[in-house]
Length: 111
Image 1 (cartoon, rainbow, N blue to C red):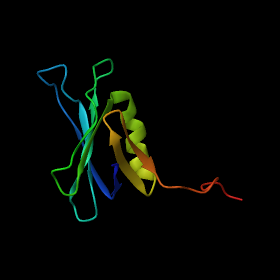
Image 2 (cartoon, helix red, strand yellow):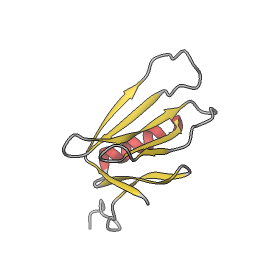
Image 3 (cartoon, rainbow, N blue to C red):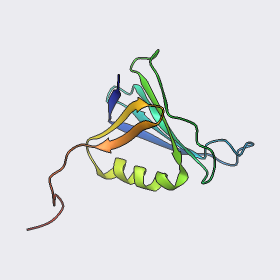
Image 4 (cartoon, one colour):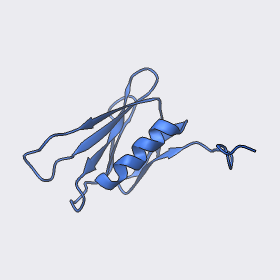
């Protein structure tokens, strides 16, 4: 069964030099309105093998752990800053994502 959460708050952390090339370089952590941890998306150096996405169903709320390449970081931060609502969804280790709610066409255009 899929897990979906509405992201109300986020925290961004950049890591300094790490001892292992396989370590993440940045992480966006997601929270709901009650400041409960919903999960994170970890970013890895370009060209690195990226671990599968996962979820932890032993926690409440279920936590969603996504992984991505560093070239996705700016776009995802931009989405979280400028779009509302934003969601995180986990279907499987190879099918998990962050997305926005439905928006009208031309929402930012003046008539």
